Image (cartoon, rainbow, N blue to C red; front, side, top):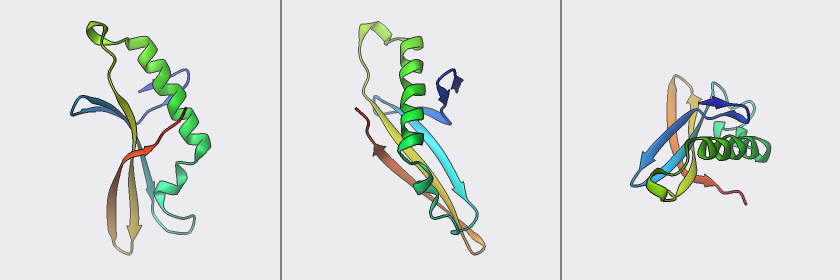
Length: 93
């Protein structure tokens, strides 16, 4: 999903919680693990994009829905790719 505030890779619903999911991949460890690429600057951009998404879509039936930010980190180690899901990876404000 792309809006004026930024891009969100995936938006999913998990047990009633709206999940904004950032996907990061690294083909080598030269610059650290993939999850490390979701720094404070990236977190703020994701939060702005999520806030705009929520403002544009509104709550269904007047009910607020809990939200969280998750990260899918994909790291290559040798010939293998390893996937990690960091649930509730960060919180802002």
